[in-house]
Length: 124
Image (cartoon, rainbow, N blue to C red; front, side):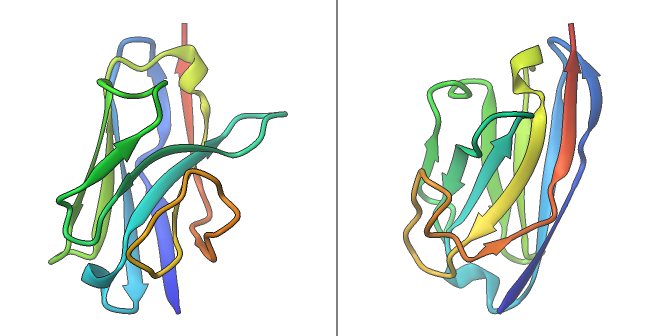
């Protein structure tokens, strides 16, 4: 079992930056991969980024590659999503997720554990 709590969302102008955090508690944090997803109103939940248990491997959706950076601090049981050059189309509720395994997927189905989400709104 693991509990995930996101924070760091807010309102920002286009071109601005935000850093999201996801704090995990429960199972040993440095034993599983983590991912970020987002869901805009009326749209399906979509993959944003993922990171391996060690932080040595990362993966990004094409829509955020070069603008977003995923990282983790295993000593703090926290995964981060640094979001730069934000666009209005990045507006969504952002969720962190894990399946408690070493793999990650670009679809939400395999993930058993989700945070409550944090709202990111980018104004034009």
